[in-house]
Image (cartoon, rainbow, N blue to C red; front, top):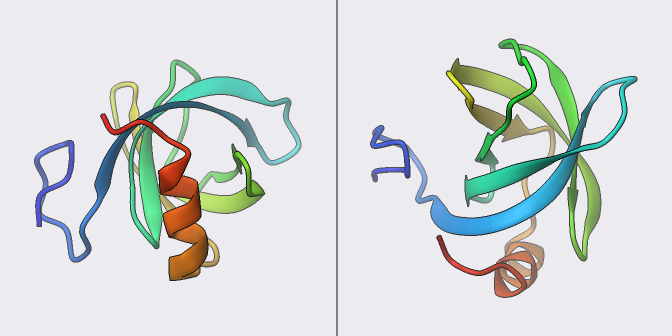
Amino acid sequence: MTSATGNNRWEHRFAVAQKVEMRVSGGRYTPVDLVDMSLHGFSMSSWARHHVGDVLWVKFPPLGSVEARVKWVRGNLVGCMLARPFHPAVFEQVLANYPSG
């Protein structure tokens, strides 16, 4: 599978174009652009400085906040792995609310 970043993936990622809010553990929520997502992770465009291993909280309307960990950073593009994967039915509901990228 190929993600929006052109990398090989073990899981299909769906391109999305959605603003969400993200915060680093202990920080304040700031807006970021969600680029793609899968059951286990997502990538986002963020002008905040992130580091591999950072713990983040991301608000996925209408679901609420979920915990994720930064797995890679390439400029302002940040790849994250969810602490708990989305349930497939919940994932479909989230995707239905977001325009495709």
